[in-house]
Image (tube, rainbow, N blue to C red; front, top):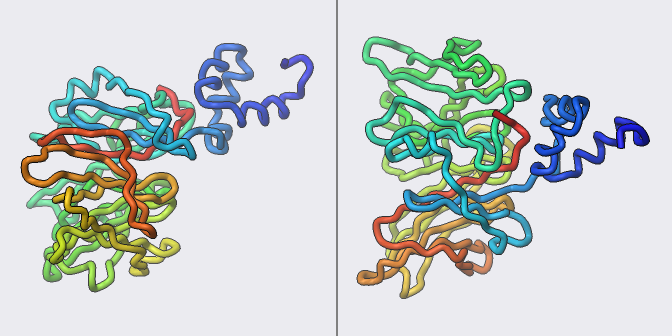
Length: 333
C-alpha cells in the first residue's frame, strides 16, 4: 500500500477506519505507527463510536450509542486495578477515559480506565485535579497530576483558586475543555454555584446559577448534554418525583434555559431516578416498582411523547446503576 498510494491519501483512509483496526495497524510499519499515535491524528480522528457504559457492583455492559441503540451491547470486564479498589466511584471522565477512586473512605489511589483501549503518553496528556480542604489554608490547595510526568504539581495559574467557604458537592463534568463542579457557597446563605476549571490554562472560575436554582434547598445534579452543561433539578410534587432539565445556553454563565420535565405517572412505578443522557441528548432513567416489586429497570425517556423504552437491563433491590457516556479513543497506555 505504501509503495503505490501517497501517504496523505493513506492518512485520509485511516481516518475513516474503526479504532480497533488502527490499534492493530500500528504494528504494520513505523510510518503508520507514528501517524496513528501522533497528537494531530488523534485530535482530528472522527470515526470513533460513542458508547454508553452501564455499571453496578455486579456487572458492566457497553451499548453502542448510535441508530442501533440499544441492540448492540457487549459485556465489559473490569481491569484488575479497578477491582483492587474497594467500592470504586467515578470522580470524572474525559476523552473516553474514566477516573475512579475509592468511595469509602475517600481518597487514596485513583485509577484511570479506558473501557475500550488505553492511554498513550506521546499524544494527549490526561490530567487529574485534586482540591484539598484545610482549615489552615485559604484559598484551597490545588494540585494537578499529568499522566506523562506521573507527578503532582501546582496549577499554572494560582489566581482565583476556590475559596475556603466553597464546598464541592458532586463529581466533575467535562464540557468543551472545562471541568465543572456543583458547589455551595457558605458565605451567601448557602447558595448553589458552579466552579469551573479550564484544563488548558488551569484557571478557575465561578458560574452563578439563576435564582430559582441557586437556593440551598434545591436538589441539583449536573451532566453533559451534547456539548453543553445540564443542571437537573429534583422536585417532589403531588404526583411524585419529577426532574426539571436546565441547560446552559451557548456557554454563557447565568444563562440557563429550562428544556422539559421528566415524570412518571404509571401505576406500576413508585420512583424514578435520573441517570444521564445519550449522545442524542435523550434522557436515561431508572425505574423502581411499587412496594413488593423489587424490580429495577433502566430505560430511555422521550421528552416530547413522554414514552419510556426499556433498555433490557433489569436489576434487583439494593443494586445501584450508574451510566457513563464515553467515546472510543486512540489514547493508549
